[in-house]
Image (cartoon, rainbow, N blue to C red; front, side, top):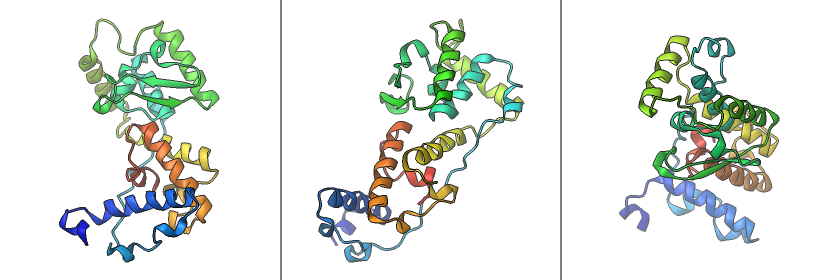
Length: 228
């Protein structure tokens, strides 16, 4: 196989084939791509390890003395933001009504993105931050980002709120349920291989959308957040 000489991993090829199968079904030609990876000489590989999901512990959140840090943590859970994005967040810029927009200077890799506002809880949080920050960011003057990051790290550690990347996993799983109507595999829902063709096509579209909302843009990363 030519792909072997190019050093492309089996896992990468499996992800690409999954996307090609969705495409072939979308254009009404499902037989263009074989349903069996073995037909292409691709072996079975283990899925990416699933990251742990967590929700904010409200009792621990109340121990955070800095309200700017509190709001950043709530943003991480409500919109699946990375820590830096939630600290640099400026609601006057971000809030566009039906979605929030994130500046490239806030994000990993400098990639602008948008995240939809779909729930009443998200809207309430944005309104609370708007009233609190009064047009400013969640970095209080005269602090800069590095200073606020140190405060975030110190206060979350003292409150016992660690491993907050899990808040992004919580967002991804809740969003999957919202968009599909069923739980993701990581939460005990059906695996991709057990889905019907129609549901598998929908699962693929949803996973790609969630990956974009999280700022990844890669299908393969969804296995870490949602399971396989």
